[in-house]
Image (cartoon, rainbow, N blue to C red):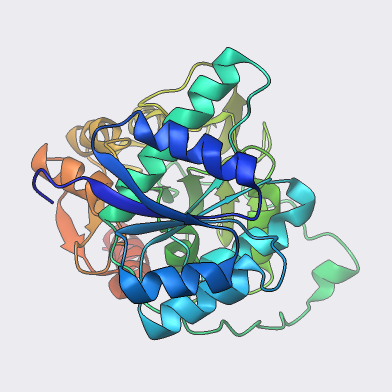
Length: 363
């Protein structure tokens, strides 16, 4: 991008919000506000004159809502879009609609109630803009919702499995950030029910990971849930770290389980992929597969290297299929990655790795 600042168009119906966002972005010399618009119609006219590097877009606006405008942008001339909205868990469906429509990231509107809150939200906004400017944006096809075939589990709980599981039980750990909601969907929805247990750190605001897990669960053959402290790690299940808390793999005897812990952000994130990967290195070693996927920054690189040093298999998503190649690039450059694969190959890598382990046990 050279020395040219990232040009940004702000679209929000509130004049005060447009001013706050403009002031926040103006504090960064690498960002320049190209203009503002009070609604999508005004924005569309502005886009005919000049194309920005990034659009900051509100969801709820008069005349046309932000998601409808986002779909039009992605269909006609894809531009990286960051949704900036008053996020609430109750409105999580709108958030996921925005990701499906092609949004690169979603950030809450800056809080101005305290100096600390403004500082934190301002940094998050500027980071999102810089991440979006590097993103590869592609139109997204509408997702089909798969109706899950019910089993006896709908009536009676299954028997407790794994009390005598061998210590060779395999687990998969995934770290992902910007672009991850859709990438995870692509991977998990094609995994079979006999896949290894999967632990996922997706950088996401607190309060949204439960809704994200439910959304994944509705379209996958495997079971997906927000992780809870003490959850056993079972085959055919994926566990999403709760927003705002760290997730660790732990082991008691021959069983793996999950620990959810408070603590400071690690690599600027909570949950952090570095924390999950380190715990997997310590407690699973060669019985783990670590995967780092699309995302901005370097979270996960050091932890993945620790996994590899202790015998784990490691994979990274390739640059072509990433929305942002930051996290995989850092992991590759530090020597943490055994193999680089495209997004479409990740589910096969998981099952091939599991099959290789089962074959080794029978030989």
